[in-house]
Length: 138
Image 1 (cartoon, rainbow, N blue to C red):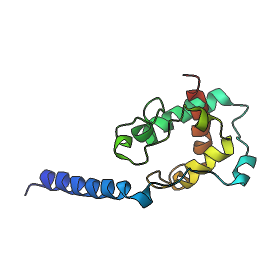
Image 2: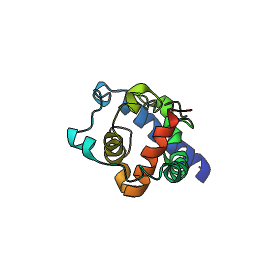
Image 3: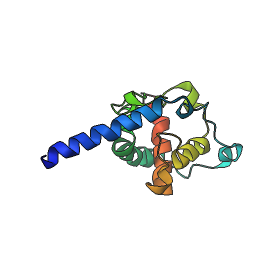
């Protein structure tokens, strides 16, 4: 078997297993709520919004758009196979959450959403939160 064929078969097998896992009832979790203390976290970019939006947009396109979509509407190509689907970050429900709650969710992850505290620095996670706020205006 050629190396490329093996790689494709391996990815299809793994993807099928992940898809089957994500379709199980226990994988479909209840409403995701950050702990109350997360609301006390303050965004360090509150006075440097434009700088953070620019940096956050780059990070978002690299790390988040594949599931959440280019405009954050939860319609990214990888997100279509997930159950539950990725959040629409432009929605009133998401935008009503505090910056601290969004930061906590990005940091901790849940289900198919990775814990970005192991991937992105604290500053980068705050930049993504700030960028997410700009999505409501688009």
